[in-house]
Image 1 (tube, rainbow, N blue to C red):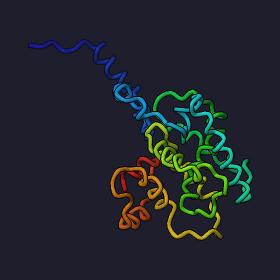
Image 2: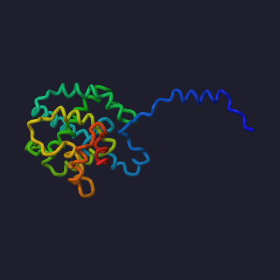
Image 3: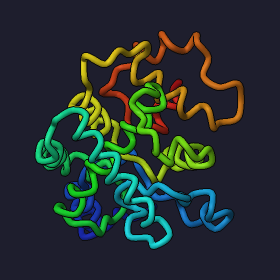
Image 4: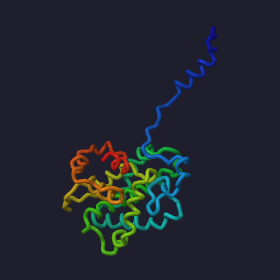
Length: 228
């Protein structure tokens, strides 16, 4: 007949169960090393780094000037001063940080500093894709045909995501009602990103589906593509 386990074992198991915290619900992850080793380049951005995993990489630093330029032109077009964007991102920083799995080396100040540059760039490049009259004549991203596919490719890397509530907040803040729009922002996102994916692209019968998609259920751009 088997003996009963000693009380000390029962106590140790019970202690672990009682102090166990709920599993964090991350939506943005680092790719496991076992996959990365198979093809590291497949998971690394080529031009565009989005907070926080791929910042501070020398080969991506040259693109930061484009982010600054896009935020500058957005401020000039809308009249919304940059402190408004920074204040909004400061309020969302903790919620955004909690979306990322693994350790993040950026402190709050640095994290918040990067959010408006990264988020407004995402909003503006997609907005200008859908509304060509907003582009400036010398914008190299649209003038040089090779850049846009690489940017779109970087925007659908799992490690290179910004929580969608951040993107949506910046979109709503910077939207100008006097600019005519013939499709929703979500539809423009999918048209922009589906252009680089294999297949027939974004079907028009998907418009109603994506327009009915609850904004608060979209975790990030990869999630939006996967579900539509």
